[in-house]
Image (cartoon, rainbow, N blue to C red):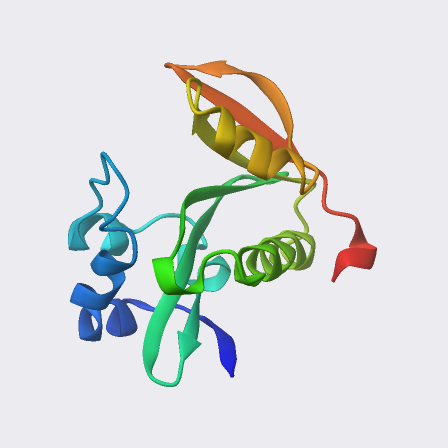
Length: 147
């Protein structure tokens, strides 16, 4: 059974290679251990990973951007667990954590040329809110009922 658990720096360090491997098949993937360990506001309260026994199989790195907004910095699911509903489960958890944090929106940036990624997030209620340095800013207001 896959369990969702809040992340901390100790878990990241203990499983660094596994976390990096989760997204290794993605073209242009650039995250290193330093990216995972970067200290951001409320990151260690908001971020979480999906674990299959003692191995991470997906993660969502989130932080507080301002009083009203939680931001998703990086979200990946290992190839073996894609297309099985784990991504949807994790998005529900992100929205739940946004509500619990008292924020009004959950945002992320997507490559402006990647229509598949934008379509993926649109199906979960994200709407395009503008362009920022070549990226589309997507946002959703997570209803309290989704917790």
